[in-house]
Image 1 (cartoon, rainbow, N blue to C red):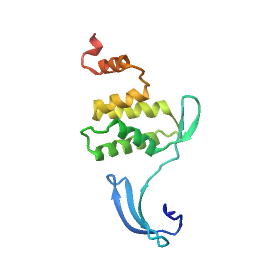
Image 2: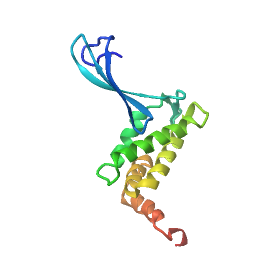
Image 3: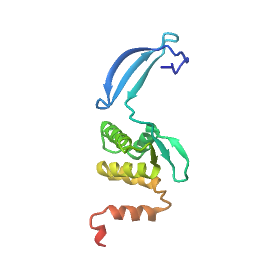
Image 4: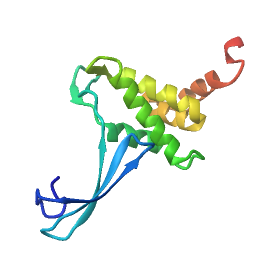
Length: 154
């Protein structure tokens, strides 16, 4: 593992332990060249996923990018960070288990929204507002009214 401080490729693992409900390994590393200490995480990756955007552009799936957008939507919500991390890991496992390497961005967005709707409605609406590109308050109102019980009967 390359040292993020000096670029030395010969770093040493000082401590390893399970992280994120045993779906990752947290490693504390030490660089003998500069004395820097840093942490890395190792996760199982079943296959390399490629995101196919709506405009046809393709890019490698970035777990951290998806996690950032979920964490932004869940900011200041009363949900434990571990629960959010479990949800993120579950989403990634679900994407990897589709059997496909090319995943449409629309599918990723729908899976994220489904997962968020199960744990926090406010986070769900926040994510949806960006994902569905809400333009004004009417878009919010329409979306939220569909969440209310009995909305289908109106």
